[in-house]
Image 1 (cartoon, rainbow, N blue to C red):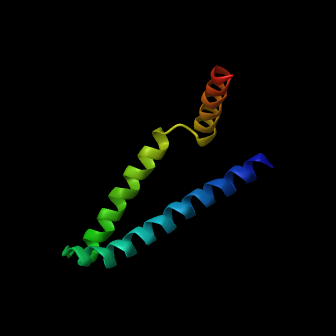
Image 2: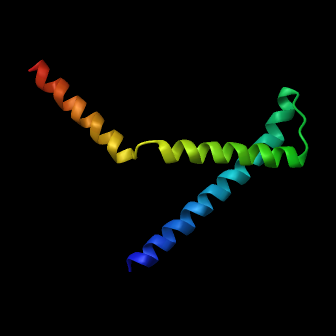
Length: 84
């Protein structure tokens, strides 16, 4: 059962990245000309790929959300104890 769950998670993650990439390239296609930037379709695809790789690298190095949330709760609890 665990292997199927991991496989589904992988498919979901890949799908999320692909959808995000398509949205990013489509946004560039419409927004760049508003700022006087005119890029070819190939340039837009490459720019989107670069931003996707950077985004994945940043997310990979960021701490998990539960770790950040737990740290915030601990700080808040310590702050409340000092006030009392």
